Image (cartoon, rainbow, N blue to C red; front, side, top):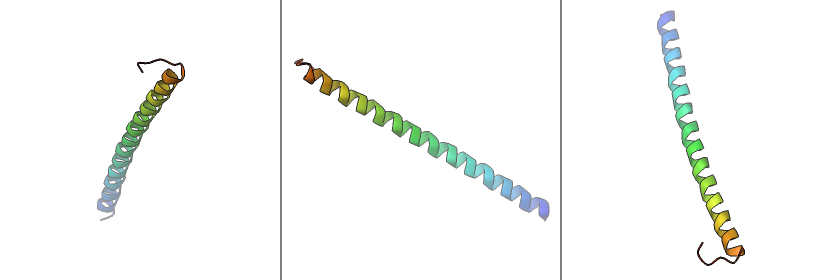
Length: 55
C-alpha cells in the first residue's frame, strides 16, 4: 500500500512540474511578444520624432 501511495505522489509531482513548465513557457512567449510590440512602438515613435514621413 505504501509503495502505491508513493508512486501516486511521484506521478502527481511529475504532472505538476510538467504543468508549471508549460505555464512558464507560455508566460515567456507572452513576455517576448509584448517586448517586441514595445520595441516596435518605440521605433515608430522615434521615426516620427526624427521627422521621417514613412515609419
